[in-house]
Image (cartoon, rainbow, N blue to C red; front, side, top):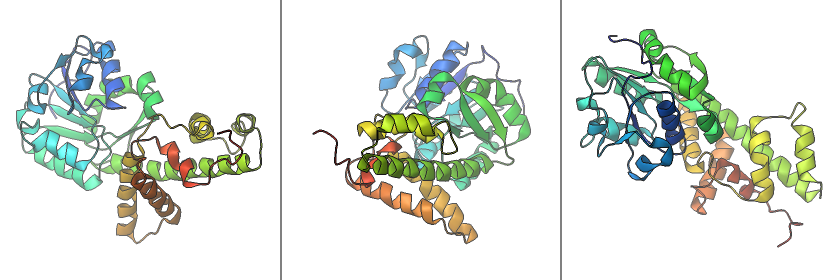
Length: 301
């Protein structure tokens, strides 16, 4: 691993400016990192928070003269396209640079990307994040890292801008394995909150008061605190896209299958999400799982 730590004033490329990637890039720019940015739609490149960043026309252009690439895109195919597709970043990255992949993808894809980049003396770490759009905006995400220890340490100044807690788990792919476990927990907690809200509404309880009381006890959770109001309102502004969580659960179920393990709760939520996607809710927040259950019969129409 060559090169110094990625301290502020180091030129970075940020590719993928979605619900998480955009606020992450905004925070890096505010911390003093010169940024070159690119996103598939090109629209978010002109977001007000990115004033001063350099928009670029392709992944290859984004990484020109940069010491590292922070990548936060939707899935395995998007990572492959950014790095090795037409005008991809992979061949354009300078030797000794680093790819910090905050996307949630399969561990096998992470390992394949690392191996391919290593042939050009480019390091790669998988660094998926959790904490929602709230955490991305506040710079308090949890970052789950896998890769060479020297590469993770080189990336640490960048990771500490986007995240409050940085955790290292071992070789490339291990961060993605931990993220899969995280998404299993998210699935169960969101589904449980949805069922609890439905039950309370059918019992005609004052649900905002109920949630306030239960957040303080053993049933308290991030999902209950941050997403119960959306379920009560039956309105699901985007925090984390249901279709992406469904993709993540597929990764977790594949990992379980490879070990001979069945995850019945995760499978049930995966099926619920598929039904909601079929009904056109794929772009809604994961809290739209409330729609899998009967509506509040007492809600004024």
